[in-house]
Length: 135
Ligand code: 5GP
Ligand code: ZN
Image (cartoon, rainbow, N blue to C red):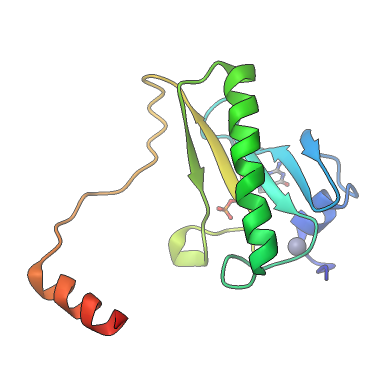
């Protein structure tokens, strides 16, 4: 299914031009227009899924296999020193485009890209609460 109001559906279908690094029947991989670092790319499925809550298992698995392939190739091409895979789900988690995508962010020594979080502390109460609820 596709969503006619979704910009990533249009990009994935090739209706809006993009800097395409890779394409197959299921995915298009494009350069992000607002890159965190040089070479920041996005994996877009051609089908519309809102995010990880919505995508089917087969496509999720294929997306991760493609991420691995792209990271290996792009590490050679870019000469980067590492990679972050980032995948945001819903607004509080930073999702701004509601069509599933994976960010492939090359990392370079001292790039100061600022991808991370403030490190908290796991209290005994919170640990026990979550472990209990997960049973
Ligand atoms: P999110 O915040 O939803 O995880 O990521 C959305 C990403 O899509 C952002 O990094 C943003 O720069 C990128 N983006 C938004 N619109 C476009 C577009 O039209 N073309 C491309 N190539 N990237 C886009
Ligand atoms: Zn879409």
